[in-house]
Image (tube, rainbow, N blue to C red; front, side, top):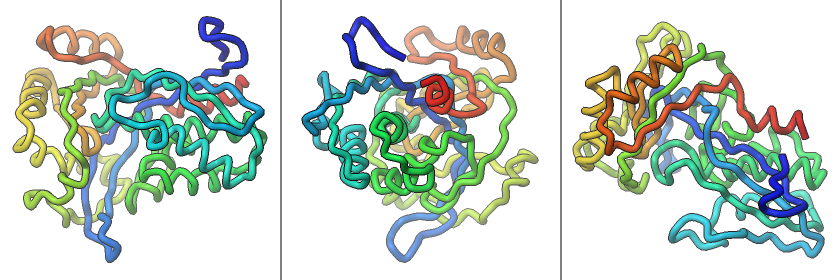
Length: 289
């Protein structure tokens, strides 16, 4: 997991992306948040995190990071500082974030980066926290962080933190990025958002009777680029939206079928093929370390 091109002392860790195979809002809570139901599908594709331990206790991000995101606001940096404080760690760390996942697309890139930092530094710093403790720290950073900490495909409820591991069949995905980012609070505030979908059960999802994304009609109306991408994907198969971002996808039973589908899309559309993972590549990296 080392990268000699960067220099000695670095270890490299995967931060996989995710898809929401469906996403419903079932109600609004007293604290102002919304109750959700969804299925998280982890992917064998995502960002890469480089970590190099420091003895002076500082936590620093190497490189520019995301445009417009200050180091102190970066979820990966915040994750390292949160773990350091919670576990009373004297060491510090340098962090490189090698971005592949489009920001704001609903693919969970920032949340996964944070989870990878928590999980990998827990090992490198010998912090000794278990998965429950790491997931609790992750929830303080964002609702999607716990699923990446636990590293399993999951049925999600609550704000997305109540997770039940599920087994999903092998699948490949054509993923498309319209390149738009609508802030999630604006979507939750949209008067056209459906907030009272009747709760479903895992068996309903398994039978195929549960589908759709509550944010899709809102984004279709607000963002012509999302509407255009969903229309292009619909010429090939059943187009879906992931999360509350603009990212869209199609599901296929084989890599060959996914590649054929990708080839039919307009050349100017930013799209690629990724495999669904049966568990997070981060767990595999931990076993190899």
